[in-house]
Length: 197
Image 1 (cartoon, rainbow, N blue to C red):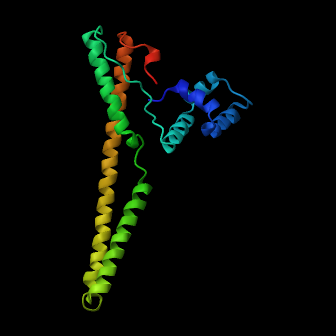
Image 2 (cartoon, helix red, strand yellow):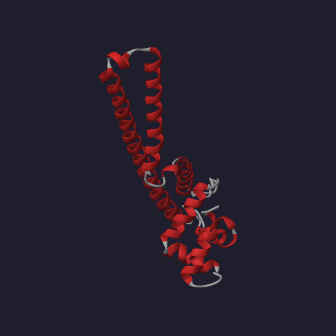
Image 3 (tube, rainbow, N blue to C red):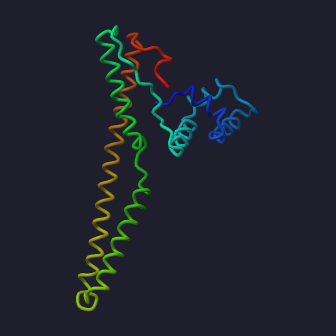
Protein backbone atom coordinates (compact mmCIF):
# COMPACT_ATOMS: atom_id res chain seq x y z
CA UNK A 1 0.00 0.00 0.00
CA UNK A 2 3.04 2.20 -0.60
CA UNK A 3 3.11 4.85 -3.30
CA UNK A 4 6.20 3.70 -5.22
CA UNK A 5 6.59 7.01 -7.07
CA UNK A 6 6.59 8.89 -3.78
CA UNK A 7 9.02 6.33 -2.33
CA UNK A 8 11.41 6.79 -5.27
CA UNK A 9 11.31 10.58 -4.85
CA UNK A 10 11.93 10.36 -1.10
CA UNK A 11 14.76 7.85 -1.48
CA UNK A 12 16.52 10.18 -3.90
CA UNK A 13 15.86 13.47 -2.08
CA UNK A 14 15.27 12.79 1.63
CA UNK A 15 18.27 12.27 3.90
CA UNK A 16 16.34 9.74 5.97
CA UNK A 17 16.65 7.22 3.15
CA UNK A 18 20.29 7.92 2.19
CA UNK A 19 21.54 4.45 3.02
CA UNK A 20 18.91 2.87 0.72
CA UNK A 21 19.91 5.26 -2.06
CA UNK A 22 23.60 4.43 -1.53
CA UNK A 23 22.87 0.69 -1.68
CA UNK A 24 20.95 1.23 -4.91
CA UNK A 25 23.84 3.23 -6.40
CA UNK A 26 26.28 0.47 -5.39
CA UNK A 27 24.06 -2.16 -7.00
CA UNK A 28 23.79 -0.17 -10.25
CA UNK A 29 27.47 0.91 -10.01
CA UNK A 30 26.54 4.54 -10.71
CA UNK A 31 27.14 7.84 -8.95
CA UNK A 32 23.57 9.08 -9.46
CA UNK A 33 20.28 7.36 -10.25
CA UNK A 34 17.20 8.67 -11.99
CA UNK A 35 13.74 8.35 -10.46
CA UNK A 36 12.91 5.69 -13.04
CA UNK A 37 15.93 3.59 -12.04
CA UNK A 38 14.99 3.85 -8.37
CA UNK A 39 11.39 2.91 -9.20
CA UNK A 40 12.62 -0.08 -11.20
CA UNK A 41 14.80 -1.24 -8.28
CA UNK A 42 11.91 -0.86 -5.83
CA UNK A 43 9.83 -3.15 -8.04
CA UNK A 44 12.60 -5.70 -8.77
CA UNK A 45 14.37 -5.85 -5.40
CA UNK A 46 11.94 -6.39 -2.50
CA UNK A 47 14.72 -5.69 0.02
CA UNK A 48 14.73 -1.98 -0.86
CA UNK A 49 10.98 -1.66 -0.42
CA UNK A 50 11.17 -3.52 2.91
CA UNK A 51 13.97 -1.18 4.07
CA UNK A 52 11.88 1.82 3.04
CA UNK A 53 8.86 0.50 4.95
CA UNK A 54 10.99 -0.31 8.00
CA UNK A 55 12.43 3.22 8.08
CA UNK A 56 8.92 4.65 7.78
CA UNK A 57 7.74 2.51 10.67
CA UNK A 58 10.71 3.50 12.84
CA UNK A 59 10.06 7.15 12.01
CA UNK A 60 6.35 6.72 12.78
CA UNK A 61 5.35 7.38 9.18
CA UNK A 62 2.46 5.31 7.85
CA UNK A 63 3.06 2.78 5.09
CA UNK A 64 -0.64 2.96 4.22
CA UNK A 65 -0.38 5.76 1.70
CA UNK A 66 -3.78 5.36 0.09
CA UNK A 67 -6.02 8.37 -0.40
CA UNK A 68 -9.57 8.35 0.90
CA UNK A 69 -12.10 9.04 -1.83
CA UNK A 70 -15.07 11.37 -1.72
CA UNK A 71 -18.32 9.73 -2.64
CA UNK A 72 -19.93 12.09 -5.13
CA UNK A 73 -23.63 12.43 -5.80
CA UNK A 74 -23.11 11.78 -9.50
CA UNK A 75 -21.21 8.51 -8.88
CA UNK A 76 -22.96 5.33 -9.95
CA UNK A 77 -24.29 3.00 -7.27
CA UNK A 78 -21.41 0.59 -7.86
CA UNK A 79 -18.80 3.37 -7.66
CA UNK A 80 -20.29 4.66 -4.42
CA UNK A 81 -20.13 1.19 -2.90
CA UNK A 82 -16.56 0.67 -4.08
CA UNK A 83 -15.38 4.02 -2.70
CA UNK A 84 -17.13 3.47 0.63
CA UNK A 85 -15.63 -0.01 1.00
CA UNK A 86 -12.14 1.25 0.04
CA UNK A 87 -12.40 4.09 2.58
CA UNK A 88 -13.55 1.65 5.25
CA UNK A 89 -10.66 -0.71 4.45
CA UNK A 90 -8.12 2.14 4.61
CA UNK A 91 -9.22 2.91 8.18
CA UNK A 92 -8.95 -0.76 9.13
CA UNK A 93 -5.52 -1.10 7.47
CA UNK A 94 -4.21 1.91 9.38
CA UNK A 95 -5.52 0.43 12.63
CA UNK A 96 -3.84 -2.92 11.88
CA UNK A 97 -0.61 -1.46 10.45
CA UNK A 98 1.43 -2.65 13.43
CA UNK A 99 0.65 -6.21 12.37
CA UNK A 100 1.87 -5.80 8.78
CA UNK A 101 4.84 -8.04 9.53
CA UNK A 102 4.82 -11.45 11.14
CA UNK A 103 5.50 -11.38 14.88
CA UNK A 104 9.06 -10.76 16.01
CA UNK A 105 9.01 -13.28 18.84
CA UNK A 106 12.08 -11.73 20.49
CA UNK A 107 10.17 -8.52 21.21
CA UNK A 108 7.46 -10.49 22.96
CA UNK A 109 10.03 -12.63 24.80
CA UNK A 110 11.80 -9.54 26.14
CA UNK A 111 8.78 -7.63 27.40
CA UNK A 112 6.82 -10.62 28.71
CA UNK A 113 10.00 -12.09 30.21
CA UNK A 114 10.78 -8.78 31.90
CA UNK A 115 7.25 -8.60 33.29
CA UNK A 116 7.49 -12.18 34.59
CA UNK A 117 10.86 -11.56 36.27
CA UNK A 118 9.48 -8.40 37.86
CA UNK A 119 6.44 -10.28 39.20
CA UNK A 120 8.69 -13.01 40.64
CA UNK A 121 10.86 -10.31 42.24
CA UNK A 122 7.80 -8.66 43.84
CA UNK A 123 6.49 -12.02 45.07
CA UNK A 124 9.92 -12.92 46.47
CA UNK A 125 10.17 -9.62 48.35
CA UNK A 126 6.67 -9.99 49.80
CA UNK A 127 7.44 -13.50 51.00
CA UNK A 128 10.82 -12.53 52.51
CA UNK A 129 9.53 -9.40 54.23
CA UNK A 130 6.21 -10.57 55.60
CA UNK A 131 6.33 -14.35 56.04
CA UNK A 132 8.48 -17.23 57.19
CA UNK A 133 7.54 -19.39 54.20
CA UNK A 134 11.14 -19.79 53.04
CA UNK A 135 11.85 -21.61 56.30
CA UNK A 136 8.73 -23.77 56.44
CA UNK A 137 7.34 -24.04 52.87
CA UNK A 138 10.30 -23.92 50.47
CA UNK A 139 8.66 -26.19 47.90
CA UNK A 140 5.55 -24.00 47.84
CA UNK A 141 7.60 -20.80 47.40
CA UNK A 142 9.75 -22.16 44.57
CA UNK A 143 6.68 -23.82 43.06
CA UNK A 144 4.98 -20.42 42.95
CA UNK A 145 7.98 -19.04 41.04
CA UNK A 146 7.75 -21.88 38.54
CA UNK A 147 4.00 -21.26 38.28
CA UNK A 148 4.67 -17.55 37.53
CA UNK A 149 7.12 -18.57 34.78
CA UNK A 150 4.52 -20.95 33.37
CA UNK A 151 1.93 -18.14 33.33
CA UNK A 152 4.46 -15.90 31.55
CA UNK A 153 5.03 -18.61 28.94
CA UNK A 154 1.26 -19.04 28.42
CA UNK A 155 0.85 -15.28 28.02
CA UNK A 156 3.71 -15.23 25.50
CA UNK A 157 2.03 -17.98 23.46
CA UNK A 158 -1.29 -16.11 23.59
CA UNK A 159 0.30 -12.85 22.37
CA UNK A 160 2.15 -14.58 19.51
CA UNK A 161 -1.09 -16.28 18.41
CA UNK A 162 -3.00 -12.98 18.65
CA UNK A 163 -0.33 -11.20 16.59
CA UNK A 164 -0.41 -13.96 13.98
CA UNK A 165 -4.21 -13.71 13.68
CA UNK A 166 -4.05 -9.93 13.30
CA UNK A 167 -1.26 -10.32 10.72
CA UNK A 168 -3.45 -12.65 8.67
CA UNK A 169 -6.36 -10.22 9.02
CA UNK A 170 -4.11 -7.39 7.76
CA UNK A 171 -2.91 -9.45 4.77
CA UNK A 172 -6.47 -10.45 3.81
CA UNK A 173 -7.63 -6.84 4.09
CA UNK A 174 -4.66 -5.63 2.05
CA UNK A 175 -5.44 -8.16 -0.70
CA UNK A 176 -9.14 -7.22 -0.68
CA UNK A 177 -8.30 -3.51 -0.89
CA UNK A 178 -5.97 -4.06 -3.86
CA UNK A 179 -8.73 -5.99 -5.63
CA UNK A 180 -11.25 -3.22 -4.89
CA UNK A 181 -8.84 -0.59 -6.23
CA UNK A 182 -8.26 -2.62 -9.40
CA UNK A 183 -12.02 -3.00 -9.85
CA UNK A 184 -12.58 0.74 -9.24
CA UNK A 185 -9.91 1.55 -11.84
CA UNK A 186 -11.36 -0.84 -14.41
CA UNK A 187 -14.91 0.51 -13.88
CA UNK A 188 -13.71 4.11 -14.24
CA UNK A 189 -14.63 5.03 -10.66
CA UNK A 190 -11.07 6.13 -9.94
CA UNK A 191 -8.10 7.32 -11.96
CA UNK A 192 -4.55 6.07 -11.42
CA UNK A 193 -3.41 9.39 -9.95
CA UNK A 194 -6.26 9.37 -7.38
CA UNK A 195 -5.16 6.23 -5.54
CA UNK A 196 -2.23 7.46 -3.45
CA UNK A 197 -1.59 10.53 -1.32
